Length: 254
Figure 1 (cartoon, rainbow, N blue to C red):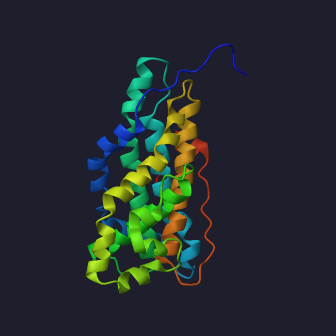
Figure 2: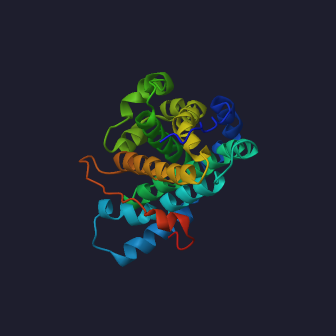
């Protein structure tokens, strides 16, 4: 039903938005291992005999909830005109928050599988692989080409236990991946950013649609992280969707 009128099309350049967001995004690749370890230890303490694959859902629940809430709050219900411009300006902040939660969730998955993440360069490369996999899956345009971003290391994408292969690389080879950080983050932001336009629709429909999409983004990130950090024999991992009522209301994010 059209209702006899057309919704205003938000006018902002996603490329320019991503450029402005890069400085904010780069800082999110410095997660707190101590904080992530506390979350993992708390979940493990309650279920000490449960396999890591079955703990991925509760360990990352807080990240998925915070990402969904960050988007729904950053892109509020709006009216045509000025409200559209205000919400469009919030997209870089929303991207930063979603990326922060994506990185944090990936780190928790690595710790859950008892990976040694004390080497910051190796950990950074592993997270960059996770983000690249996520961007490739989300991209519907074909603009994101892993070979162009990672070169010969693109073969690591989609490979189970690729963390082991990363650890086996020389420092020079790992630096080749690190050197692609800006391109990887840009590809991630360009894959994730456009659907946030759903949050620019008026009457409150958009923000929740964007929040639900962020759950999908985080689910893809977490799935990629289980491939990177998990065992060589892939295990099925179930990541449940958080109900809208929990996203909309305040409460525990653990």
